[in-house]
Image 1 (tube, rainbow, N blue to C red):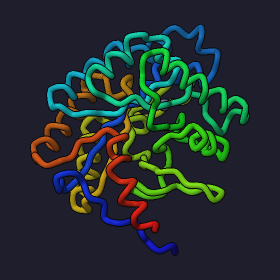
Image 2: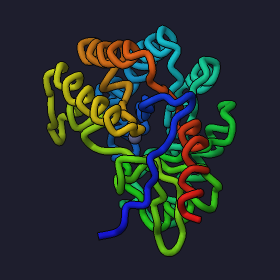
Image 3: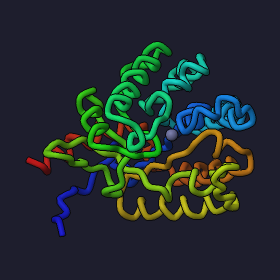
Image 4: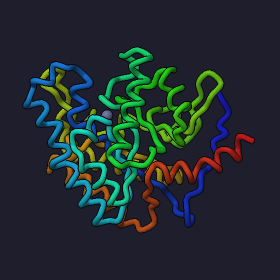
Length: 279
Ligand SMILES: [Zn+2]
């Protein structure tokens, strides 16, 4: 067993817990990256589009109401298809992270396609007016050795795709390391609510989201940990589910001492602390 040398991380103003709300705006890219056959599946595409037209406005209103800054991972194609999305997110003080271009899964495409996916995503975000992203999140959270190298080569401050700890840590591969702000399937709305006509899925009762994520928040609070939740606007943006997210946010805000932070702010906060221990 490896020694646990991860320090107890400190949050600004001695806040006892840190929480990040993150949103992957897969929209139509999530479908088209899965299969080109979606190009003529207008119903499926309309569900992806719902994320931007209905999900994002609901999310922005909630974040505005509670003055919470959040991180949005936007595939390049989504930025192209919805020209005002990036501008709107930036205007409200949110972070834009890299989430591929066509949302291609790294493990399913060649090294060349992974490189192209990285480049096209960067170009599309820049064209939409986003600053160079500090963070990278791979499509479906699948990193390959090639993606790992691309993340390093492109100078990202952090990755948010791995699950090797439930605290920020350094993910290692082949002698190199990158600051990881970890994720987990249980803290993602997709396994709870994601469903497709081709593969089925789950229609968990909306209330389950409140119960399970509140338990995660309370455990993070006891540990003094950072935790992050991952959501998809087309999934969480359905009204009945969204009400459960609202309840959770209101509950956390009610504690009055949570550090709600964008992932780039979390990276800035933890990198010096983790490097101190590594010395
Ligand atoms: Zn995604």
